[in-house]
Length: 359
Image 1 (cartoon, rainbow, N blue to C red):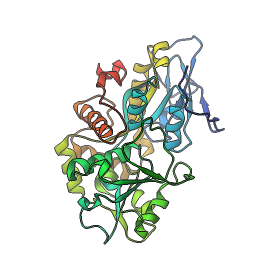
Image 2 (tube, helix red, strand yellow; image 1 turned 90 degrees about the vertical axis):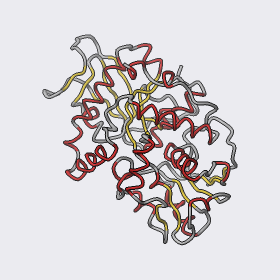
Image 3 (cartoon, helix red, strand yellow; image 1 turned 90 degrees about the horizontal axis):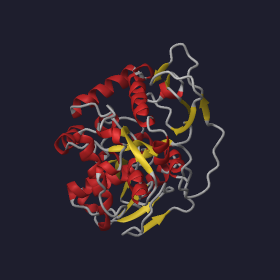
Image 4 (cartoon, one colour; image 1 turned 120 degrees about the horizontal axis):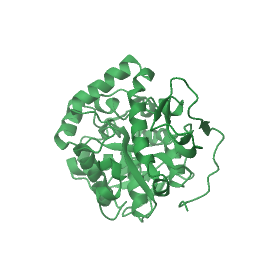
């Protein structure tokens, strides 16, 4: 039985995609005339998933029912509730729920990636050096959000700022924590809906009520080179700026550490893996095929940005493989969560992923 942490009524935007209805359909696996097994997924409507959601790619033997409209935070929350068989999921939340016995395994589909230095904001003229954040109040949209975990980890490794050195303020709703935290956390009550947490933090930062803000947004090449939607979202109040905004320094950090932060991954219920042993391999192949077709949904500027991203880090971060960079990255994320009081210890990588990740 799926573990649930609350009751969530599915909204009306779930869409059922019947496989096998297009002449141009790509089918993963050998054809089979038996009745199809229904599999539910919670995915973003993203260029790398469009071919799956729009029905261009099918998985032989399975009917995919895909929900894609809610915000990322809401999708992650609902997946943690056990609503879908497969879902895009916060990488940090995945590690926490695994430790607490939730029966999920990850696929090596690292959907959203990128450095999180640009997600650390301050108010111009009120901070001379990151070390001055010690003893100060730091705002974040969720204490346990993956982007926030990575940002705190960066401040720890580069500036020696421990999580317990600072006071914490949270503007949004948590997806899942599962442990008593080692710090006191002040929270906005009631929290705004998922996806509406940033403006409140930007206002507090501009007013001087908090001294920095850690927020989500702008994965991939905007996280490396700048631009994207995050500066606009946070820049509606006077003086609010990224604390780290030097592309060369950010790229140097990625190359030196050989870590490319994983933000979202694809996870799957273990009961579905046990019941449908061929499904993980077929899913991997289907997501890889969908990724190949993503360019037709991208602008020329986006394609160029992704090529710059690959060149800057020296590899394709969306190859959907468990390479050495991915292993180092997952281990770093676990280490940071231990320091931040979110998990007790780093788990073995083999315990987290489907066996196909290591083939």
